[in-house]
Image 1 (cartoon, helix red, strand yellow):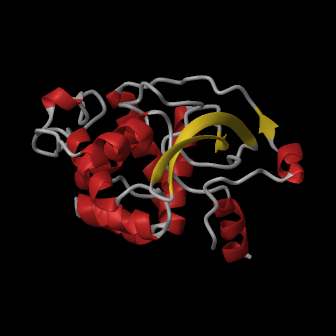
Image 2: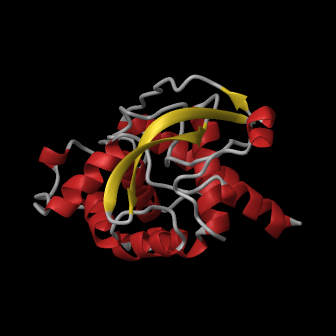
Image 3: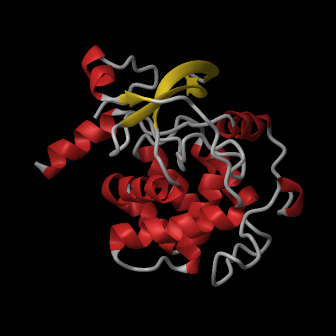
Length: 226
């Protein structure tokens, strides 16, 4: 599969997708956690382990500025059209040829947090199973490496992993339910942040929406399911 970070949606895709406004749908840490737990069970039939939930919540926190910059219930900055047939056009940052560039692209849009979380988990399970396995072990570094190798994001894998770690609680654990202490916190409450300029650029880009999967993932999934 060739990833096209500067993809222009073909007219036939635009015609088949229901374009919706890019409205923010902010969620609290507890709401993110609850939706991911439901989505994980919808996809796998099992409840996520605390380690899995901690890593996934950290990624969503990093991708959406702790849930406050989430748009159309898109949990992971997923590009293209959602299973509901909805898409929104948003400005985003991509690291292209080593340069942080601002572009406008199509992102999946959903009608609920549960729908967004379920599609996010489903894509990880289908396209990035080794990353999901790493999340189950609480291995943030391997999680980031596996996503990078699968072209989930365009940033440096080490910087992305550092961003994930900084989004987790001090001990990296999560409570037993969605009403427990949030497992993601503002950066000042977490472990000291790396101070590299590289990580700063990554965090800035991620907080504004997505460095994620190209819309070709839907076509790939259809081909593999056929």
